[in-house]
Length: 99
Image (tube, rainbow, N blue to C red; front, top):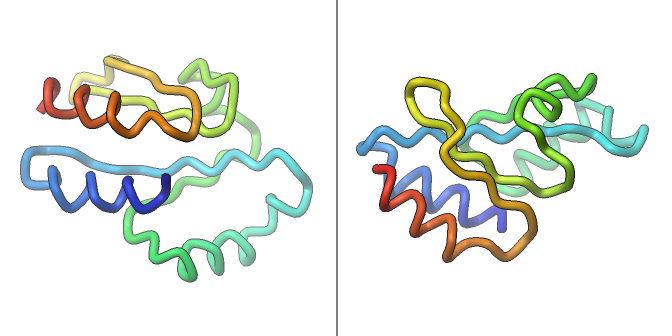
């Protein structure tokens, strides 16, 4: 799924899309920022990644599971939410509609 985020970023950046990853650690070792930075670099993640150790974004966005993709418009309104690993086609369709 991670490569798709980069594809969406490159494909629709000029249409106004901003991809932001939010890392909400579940396990203690996932709270290690150096480990996260190494993963981001190794994975070729070129978009911003926010760290959400206290689950503030998780709660604000109504997330209940990993991974969750949330599409938010420029006004801050949640337009769609997708839970699960293989929602690429649905997300692509929603992005096309919104952009």
